[in-house]
Image (cartoon, rainbow, N blue to C red):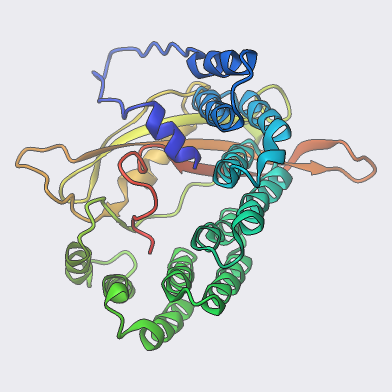
Length: 370
């Protein structure tokens, strides 16, 4: 949801001359619009929309605490309208969850993600397609928290729920997520097992044929090798996917928190990195667009991005640069309560968090992951 709000409020920047220093001016346009909305006592639906846009604006500028506060206050004022505007309230919770996850508030991330699902279930009913569809957020949440087994269990439970309500299409979507999760976790044996189950369950249904073909081709793609690449690309093309699909990537670097002065006012550092996905699926033109610090730490991510292989960019004209993408990276410790106190502080291991703020500019849910 946050990715969608960001993409709607800012276009992907064009590459800049290499030696031209960047001057970034951040305005509070959406924040001012929210203030005007509150002053005239605007309707709840309008306020929620304005709050999400203001929160996304603050997040894009690196003001994570401000974004959290804006969204948290909007929830406190409008949660009572969940039965009247359930989709908007669900989206509000989901946007708050995204910001909280980057900012390091894992408790708020978990609670708000669950609330975003619960709102639709209570208002629309557990069997409503929208309520089932957003239930994937629970599995996505555990995956982001680095708990693939809990994510797999969540996808499985929701797939079974969808099947009980006769929604085989959504049950299949959730089941396919399990397979892609296993691939992301580099657990190919589990992914192969799920692929067999999916073939047995959905192999005769035309709607699932493209996803099955891509999954089987992806399983045939050797890690770090080119064998199977042609079949994988052919499956993607046959499925009619226009957006480049990440085929493989090297691991991210580890970061030592010692020189980063965590625990002070600099307990969160972030950067926006832009790069081209070229027509042949390789990356180029990697640059730090807008760091909150000096950006040196973010340049350590260049090797990982340079090593990615995407599917070829469909429809790219001769001489085309391909597709430009901007990704936000946040490096921070999570909140924890030390022994003997209930005061939460940023302690423990440092973790890297990424969100693609351009991927959802042209579409919402139909992308690389079935």
